[in-house]
Image 1: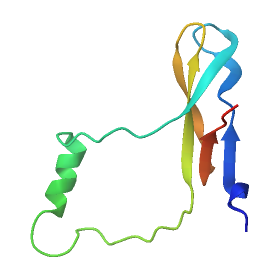
Image 2 (image 1 turned 45 degrees about the vertical axis):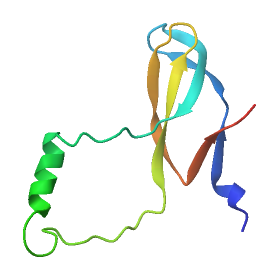
Image 3 (image 1 turned 90 degrees about the vertical axis):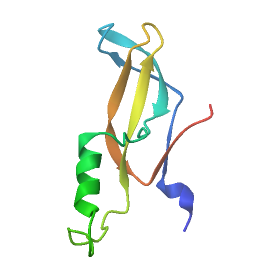
Amino acid sequence: MNGERFIMKVPKVIRTFCPRCLTHQKHTVKIFKKGKPRITSWGERQHKRLLKGYGSTPRGKQKQVKTTKKQSMLLKCEKCGYVSVRKGVRLRKMEVASK
């Protein structure tokens, strides 16, 4: 099967609504990527504490059933510079088109 079928190509510039300008403006598109996790955050410390000790993991291992992830887009307004996130869509792969 052709792998191109599962790729969604998004244009570099989209004309969409800007919540700050309250009008439709041109927005540059980037794919949203998760940032580096903070080791000192409460959730990370709690997770390490749960995994610490003798024996196996405290929770049972779960099977991974989903074959795709939700991918979001970062939209930056060209007029005012406001950055907003467009809700994620479940896809195998998303890429910003070169044109």
